Length: 74
Image (cartoon, rainbow, N blue to C red; front, side, top):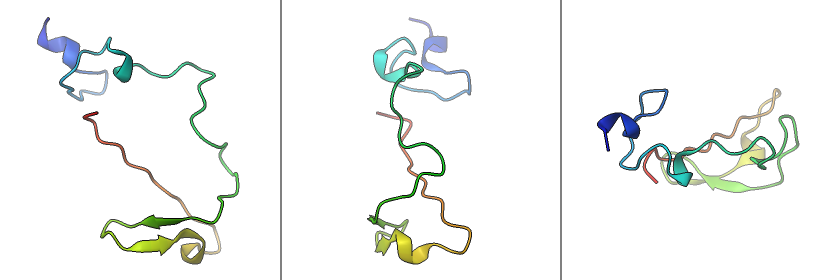
């Protein structure tokens, strides 16, 4: 296997080849979450410091953005 098989089109490296199922893009009809603009249910999540935050209490007049980060290494 060549080293190029471990880099994606964005230049990210992974310890597994691109053709492995975990590295492929999902099919077009794969459910990836609610549509943009959908109201978020009442949830509490840890912030970057580990403190649990009520998302609704942090929303401003324009709403809020919740970002989920997933490591490049699965």
